[in-house]
Image 1: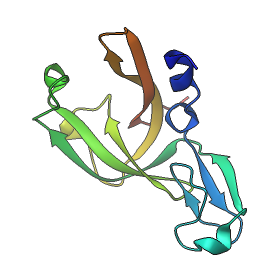
Image 2: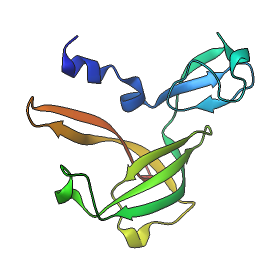
Image 3: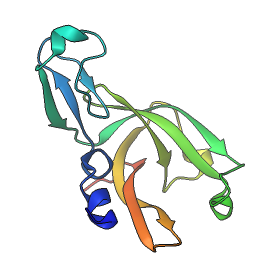
Image 4: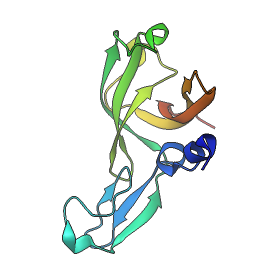
Amino acid sequence: MQVPRYWREQSERYKLVGSKCNNCGLRVFPRRSLCPDCRHESQGQMEEVRFEGTGELVTWTRVHEALSDRELETPYLMGIVELDEGPRVTAQIVDLDPEEVEIGMELESRFRKLGEASESGVVHYGYKFGPVVSD
């Protein structure tokens, strides 16, 4: 499989796809083949689900020291978002000044560039979260 195709088929990254346990109802992200609560009782009971991508900010931090290939992006915000369906997701928080960020604020997922493999030129995309935009 070609590298770009491999990344395009990562549904967790592009579509916020997780799992629901049909034994206990727990929803998890990313996908799992066994429920972390039911364990072996969930064998064959896990269903793939796509999350809406909206949720509430649980906690956040401002990152000043980045990985070696991300120095130019600092500072940036990282947070934990509890999706409306239950799972918690760690993601970069975008389109907000740090002074605007509040725990409990409603956020929605955004499809954005995550990085680039400089040797091959492959661009990696995925989800980040930003403020809910009114229609």
